[in-house]
Image (cartoon, rainbow, N blue to C red):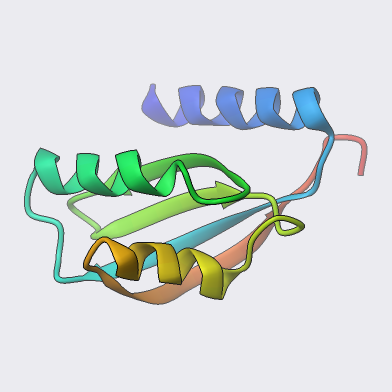
Length: 101
């Protein structure tokens, strides 16, 4: 169910702007331990330039950020995480393409 909702949200983001977005998955250090850690990341990273969506997964220790690469970079997003106390490693960075492509 959650995955279906995420797919629908991504489709809406693409339909609204038609922009090429990227999906960056990071692992934070120190690890996230609770909902407070997740909220800290979500509430701060949503203000970084170009960020469209932020998701966290405690079990996998992943932070997934959907962003506009014309407005921010991987290094810029990692810098945003560093500002709130998290070093990060990139798990993946991939294109989220428009349905027209």
